[in-house]
Image 1 (cartoon, rainbow, N blue to C red):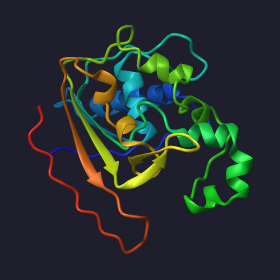
Image 2 (image 1 turned 60 degrees about the horizontal axis):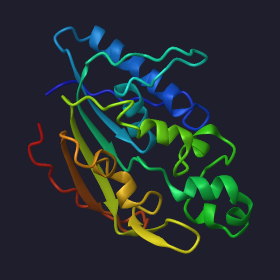
Image 3 (image 1 turned 45 degrees about the horizontal axis):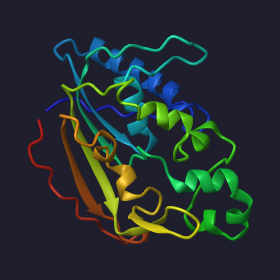
Length: 216
């Protein structure tokens, strides 16, 4: 057993993904400096937290207002992403381009989407944004091959993939976008995806979380 730390970014929507990755890199460094018996951490990133972790692992993270990226320090053993939009979310595009229509129709209230349509993360989470295309260019910015990767994928709720098409997902991110394997494809990583059925949001709902077998 080890110590467990949680991190809230200083601004979830107002900071770009690479700057969030820079904040994470600082926290990892601090944690290891205060736990000298440890040399690596296990990262669990929910939603954009998973992308911020990748920014650090792929050498793209940076400090705010700095141009030089932070080099990955070989200090992560495993990355578990939960509902991370590795290939973006249609909601980001919709809330950025068609926010007024969706908001007036009550969609944002229905899904409790506390979103500023003009924030940088909303722009970066749009499918095929320059930020995501750069992050997913694994030939230029490779993921470390000595890390174990696990994607926890929420399913059971339809998610818009366009104004007319639906895919399975967690009602915010499609199942394929949540799965890092859809980005890495056949690259020789230790990786696994775990699907978790998400019932419609009600306070009384209970979700059975499947056990993850030995990975790495």
